[in-house]
Length: 239
Length: 302
View (cartoon, rainbow over the protein chains, first blue to last red):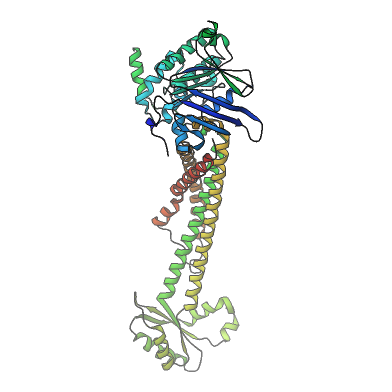
């Protein structure tokens, strides 16, 4: 049974891990004994060396897989016990920026960005203007009818971000969202994430870009060898 | 044009393209080919069934409208024929009773005995062609008994053996067509299932993203179903056109046959309409099969 939109109280954590472990098949655990609570409207950087498990942790958050053990609650729903209908509704409240963009080459820029709205059943008359406005904001206003293969890496990155935020998700996850853009645009994109955060969206950004982590004073979730450490904002640490 | 004007114009532009790039995969070739072959065979099977049914119906009807009286050759054959004719013409339900001329009897026997001296030397029986009144159902058994009493050498043949054979042939033709239809349907359904699964595998990455964006299985499966309907309709049209060409050629070739040996089928507007049914039904079946196959496979995905 799908949860009603209101089943998650505003005071409840958006994400709650209790001794969560994840393994692929019969391999070793890539994530071990994770305990974590992300309150609504929080902003976190997820850091860690390559292979530390950042993408695996994000895949749990965007509901691509279920934990091998422990309890993972998202919007108050126990993911392990959620049926397909519930997972579908939960996923509509999560925006994801994939590291490899995962754009649809056969769709135009505007149709790629509008895809989550279309899936949610929104009519173009209702939302097309907002999609165009968002694309103009991320600097793709002149490329609305272009196809992704004709875009540069940075343009694809911005399109992936526009697609992730177009529904104003309650939880926004981004895997290296600034990996293909210059520093100036990276900062601008972080401001976009920050503005969504200010509107109440819970944001988790996986990044290797420590200068951004330094610049934006948000707490850091550090993954090392499958285990999680929660660190305060770097700016606060310097005090 | 101002920016707001441009934005207003864009508001009425629908979302473009399908959720998946189904128009770019190899199934665009396979599914129409399968649909064309299935529609072609289905139309031919239907035409065979309809023609067999038409032939059997006409033959049976012809046999039911007439009976034959045979009087064995003997001295006084002519008097026996007259006596039989008197009795037959007085029976209710009999429209006419006419003796066949000796030439006509010889012509009927010629295929078996030849038309040479052998036939000339043989004592020939007399045959009376009896026509029943339309919609009359006289008791042929009772007439036969009365006839045998009046003319002991006479025998009434109501063609029951032929009628049973015709009915059996018609049933066999219908059963054969039914079996052919079932085989074609089973093969077509299997082919659509495998093609849909192959397409799902081809588009697996995009399907996963759609799922992660909150697309339901039904939304994704509908994409495959609608595309299967489109492809089956295109292939079906080709198969239907080919089948019509073949059937028209067969009808044309059959028109030159000796119609006295076998009544030719008469295909009316209803029959041609029935042969067009595989077109919409095939497209609907392809869509339903693709929908169910996709739903089954999607449930096993993320």
